[in-house]
Image (cartoon, rainbow, N blue to C red; front, side, top):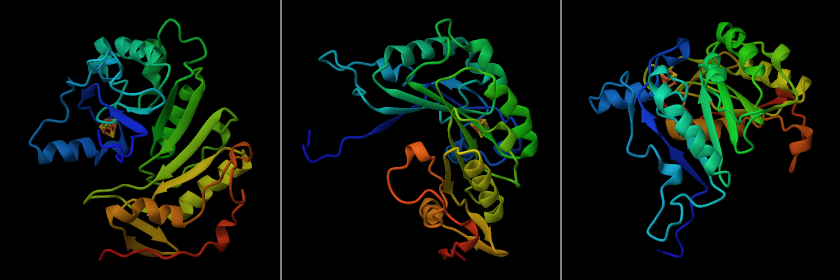
Amino acid sequence: MDSKKKEKSSYEWSPWHGCTKKSEGCLNCYVYRGDARREREASICKRTLQYDLPIKKDKKRNYKIPSGKVIFTCFQSDFLIKDADPWRSECFKMIKERSDCFFVFFTKRPERLKEFLPEDWNDGYDNLEIGVTVENQKRADERLPIFMNIPMKHRMIVIEPMLEEIDIEKYLRDDIEEVTAGGESGPNARPLNFDWIKSLRDQCERKNVHFSFHQTGKKFIKDGVHYNIQRKFQHSQAKKANIDYLRSKRIKFGKAKVDTNQLSFDFDIEE
Ligand code: SF4
């Protein structure tokens, strides 16, 4: 192996591929977009060849994924999709076996989680973070009360693609590790208004919950001006806003408070 080759800090594990659309946020799903390009049917959920990737070993009987890695799980589907019911318990076993790695998955189906938690779940696995995804007020009010009622060691809220202003303040609690928000990508992306992001960030600050503005999406509105942001700049432009709220106990650098009314930053305009 090339000794200069940078070791990966994270891996993606897709035990199955394909998903059924659940709600408004799924309209322009990237799994569907990718499969359409490859002339594949995205609504059919199939197990993949990397189904048992976390426990695969090399010739020396070492795990192929080294210790200490973050494993992003099921990003080509939803971990809780019905079609995957026969496979899920085995995945939980693999997650448990690899307690030396940290797993993360997101779901739009928290109402199915309780039924499928393993018997040894208790108050959650130390090495698994679950994120619930919401896109508008209706889905926040549907999913967050359910999600917040399920015991887990690591939880986060993902608001992406954010389709309108959302009030989640009443659901915010100390045990939420992060709220992250962003816009939508792709040719038919729906717009994200920076005012919605600022409102969310202020809710998190009031409840002292870590907040990050993940990416702008393609169509971004700030101060009434509409921007088209190229894919490669969507993350960096969001970071340029310098709007993340770092919960006091997580702060390492910089200041915790940002006056969102004083923000001034420019965007790269695509067209
Ligand atoms: S739940 Fe996620 S993966 Fe499934 S269709 Fe919706 S956006 Fe796509």
